[in-house]
Image (cartoon, rainbow, N blue to C red; front, side, top):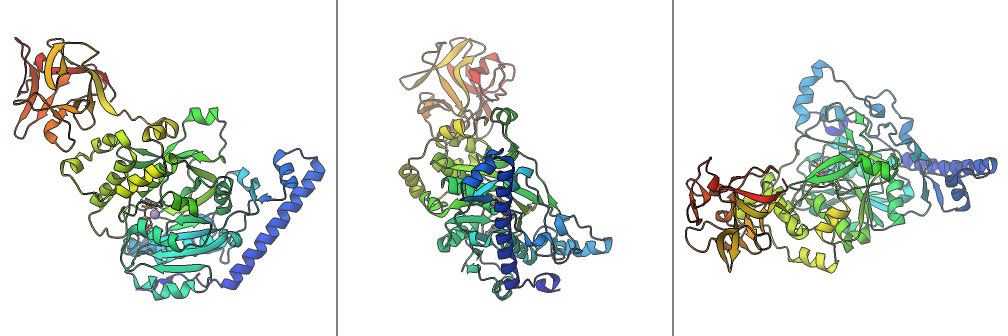
Length: 573
Ligand code: UD2
Ligand code: MN
């Protein structure tokens, strides 16, 4: 097998060469920008507001588009300018063979220059936008475990080549206990040509969350910029991010994440106005900003986009602010859920997450993680999410558990100690999850209960009622018969839940870990009453009102029996 370095013929960038080129590019750009603005001002008598501000305020310049790769060293190399590469039929076997090294086309990645040019995909107005001359500097942190050699290098080169040197304090590579040999001595040697690159090695696998914390702990820049290790930063990516933090240190800007194809390595544009959202049970997704909002706020394609949840991998944050927020919950393991945690934390504790369309970074989205999870992946992610739900979701955490995570409550899964996280939330005086939904993500549908109101028996037209802790069946009365039907299948009034009541009062103190308090009730937002089915250990049992006396009891279900049909006043799902 060829050594990875040998399959990347374009890795011999000389550090002096790069540095000089970059510095020259910056100087040239600054000079060009100011002289151009000055001439324009004289000629047009400050027609344009942006230009006149620029001239009066010596503290800003046009975003630097410095990019030495725009005139590539090797213009004929494959993949230049983000073009798709087609591999010939006889290469297919090799492509297949190497796929699992990274769960993308590793064979192809190794053929593409590590400093390839990219198409400038920014909205046109971005190159005209102004940023301050005294932006804070950033440490760029890449965490990786067993990353493919050529993609790791391409990630680093894209930062070196497309970031104004004075804003790039350093690049920190955090090796999360990789097993590949080339990520040891060979990586040290390669990176030694770039004084700004530092390598931090972890002595055991920590997972990306604690690896990021390790990187942040040694960072010297004023801003932390986290990136995945298989990305390519595009033209002018950095300044627009830092500008937002300059304007308000509690802003957490994310670049637009564009797609580098896992198959042909082409660089693909994504739609405008996309923002990160979550669906239940805390599943990340992309959705366009609602049309109505775009119109009302007269949004243009280059305006920052308020983002309820970040994707997780790529963002900048003021370093001190990151620590004020308590960084990441260090109890989160390996991978997953940390983007939810930091997103809720930022919004609920006074910050903002934004997608900055003038900053664009390509990322290889892979079908599978190319590394192992020390424990089981599903269990790792659900445990992380449950930690987030317990700390941040208030009464909405039932929606999380009720969408497929009920088993965690039934089995009393250990999710670790949460005391510190809960204390942190108090200390920071963070707002409620309801506030977050109302103000940050108002288009999210999140009813706290599935149904509520009277629980009417269809046969009798009478209702369930609780009197002094005893379940009764009485003439319907809105004032005293309000029950909730919860996401966890409980029929609840305050702290009491309708129970399997062969013995006792028909109710018990609610306890989400008790499946015997759970009732199946189809809701479908319909007015059609359905059975309450008692989930018994052996067979399905239903709640029935006795046709004669009106007593309540549990009996086997009969689909057509109206005395077994119950209906809530309001259904939300
Ligand atoms: C997305 C995020 C990723 C992270 C994850 C959820 C983007 C583009 N990516 O998944 O950053 O937020 O959602 O947690 O938004 N890594 C380690 N140690 C580990 C596991 C991973 O260092 O134990 C590294 C890995 O090499 C990579 C980064 O962490 O550089 C993110 O992992 P990923 O690329 O597998 O995650 P991704 O993009 O599927
Ligand atoms: Mn990734």
